[in-house]
Length: 457
Image (spheres, rainbow, N blue to C red):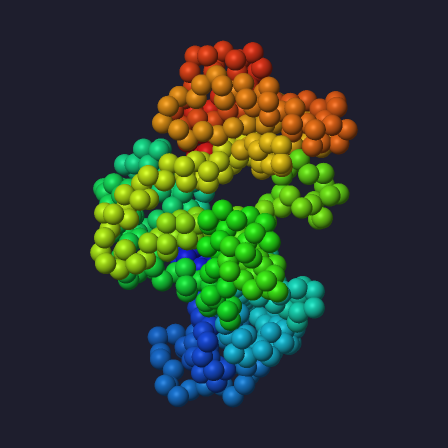
């Protein structure tokens, strides 16, 4: 089995927990950037100890070659009981010993598949894990999966922060996303501001080191990647605009950096859902967004204020952030959660139409926060998401129905002729009576934060 996912998601914790609770003998080994000889020695000692429970291998013990070590692994994983073997951060070991996949392939074909073993390869370098299992790779066809570990959903914030209100949990999610290692650093006994000051503003700790570490461990030129991420966090979306905002030389394109960051799962390339499938590969309406919530927050608010933070001016930095935080949450996490709500309702069959794709709509004429489409049935669901402190008024409903909808229809084939339009509106603080009346006239769904929070659990 192959398991992959970016760092801090708890892959190692998950695999070790699974191995322990399986009540089967298990071997756990983690690769690193050490030399091949050192890695072989470490792996050899783990194999020896697995075959000699309760005993420690001699400090200098090592099999002579990787094929021999894998052959011995097959020998100790015999019998009626299944053995779980986890090779963690396998791409790091491959970087030190490029011939390792071929050695493992030969060992699998000749020895391991005849043993009683459950072999798990795990890695944080998502792109390399995919290449290790690709059609041209030695291990192709020999591993089940791959299993991609992804961040926890918003609903998990309830378990982490049972004392927080839905509004507070949305704010935390906007900052940290669903990364368990990050969520563990906040406490619901503190306010959001105090959590940020204590955890994110400190000069030491993973919140300050991760933005450099996560990128730097996978690329050779981290400065340009950092600049690209910062440019996107500041609002650049198209490759040409990103290159300019990142300060790349005029002859240098942002495309290679964007492709790599998408592969690493730190960026997403998005298209309006209203772009016809045949045009999606060539559409110029694509935009890049930061997929990692904390990197989005870090490059937007923390990195520009590092000089102030170094002087311990935490209150001043927090004051700057607090004034912009509501807009930041509304444009990022809240809109994303509203789209997630549409998707969950579609899966449950609770929408007025079937849905093929959920996202947003944007072009030079109009921008709509939430959009879901069914090309076969020619049905479109449009929605707006408002994170304001006041109840949403009639004008928001009127604008989407009367002003934006005709512009969206123009972007569809045949100017949207024959299409059926449905509406949904999301609000942090509910809706005025006038908004509810107009929405009812158009059979629009109204979703407040209480409903959103409940339905996403």
